[in-house]
Image: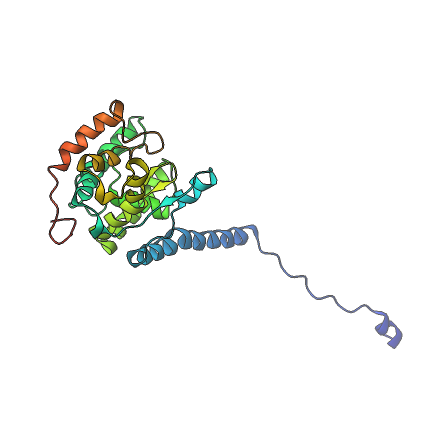
Length: 250
């Protein structure tokens, strides 16, 4: 070949980069989705559970949702040992009779709730105080099987790492007691005009009456579902035994 022909020949092109096949792209997507799920449902919740064992939660997802709906935030934190003993009795009597016996999940109550759900009923009941705390600090309001499954997953860890006293302390301070009202001391002031340690035992019982429907029920109501629930709570409070030295469980 002549020198002129050699100089006129085009230089060879570098090979084009190979594109990943469709299965390779899907594997990459699934890999990142798996790591995202581990972070979202594993690392982050566990980190918050450990943190809130020692640090009071600054807010809850429900508070942000209510504020987006135009409700304010009346919230007052108090330590567990500043509550009257009737508050502890009313909480256990109204919300979780076997609070001191289970490990965050009441298996018997859960079995009954699942049987009702399988028969076509709503997914209600069986939420222990520990599960309610778990939902409030980590999850979102609403009723579906996925969220209930996450409650069942995290609640035993909360019960194990926190202990009963801390579980009840956080519960009493973050539960919703009315439109924009969080924590039982804020509820005492909003509904009865006094701090919780200045209320009579029957007024304390009335506050726990409205927890199933805090946006609609009034603890001062003298009839209707509030009155019927009040009678049950007040009777059950007398049977609740509290441990010594402000320990919740004997």
